[in-house]
Image (cartoon, rainbow, N blue to C red; front, side):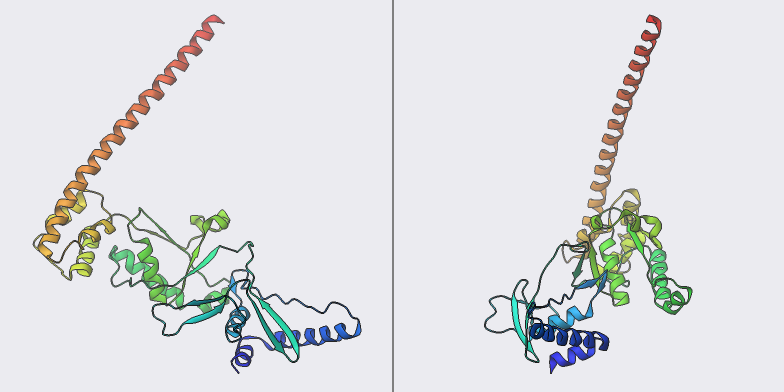
Length: 321
């Protein structure tokens, strides 16, 4: 009954009719012409970049056909699910019969153009726009853009455009790009897929193809206050002013600040430790900048020497000429 329900719900009538027709023809040919007694029906997981519903139906159906003769099965359970998921392991055969015709199901894995390109991810990230520590104006713009996009599917269809939207997130490590992706997915109740950009043509991923560019940079006083509210549950403190001056005086990522806010349970000690961290970070950044500047000067002098040496050599050649 489960298999019949799955087939009726997910397999279009035309497909069922075609498969039935092919099976009847197959039986006739096997008896009349004594030709090959086998036919192969391939059900791909993807059609281009779109999931094939028939594949999911077949996978669910085969889970009900697993028998003691199967040597390998795949069992999984996500954290928020109550039941276990049982599926056929790849290259494992499942024998079945329908209207007197024997079927041999095999899950095959092939390496094609799209193989390895998309990887589904189970999202269990608590990040939301309410808890996301970022510039308030940028956050508001992103939320408004997402909400507007979700309401305009009919408009995209009317003007003949694909209903899609691209967001390019860029910035130093630790500035909240992954948290932003999770917040967007939770806001829209969408799934997340991991795309291997090495398998995609550069033409499709260049910045000009993105609808909105979102720059996530170093921590600011407003971002710090959002982090303090999330991690310490406070809106104001006597040390805020000193901390904000320290944040403005050096480059520090929101991830660095968040790590300091999780040091212990005493708010005063946490904020005092953050002040010390910002002071040491400032000194370290200044030392790194001085070393970089000295290195660049050295390279500049070396290049200048090479240029002068080349000019002298050219001048000697002209005198000899």
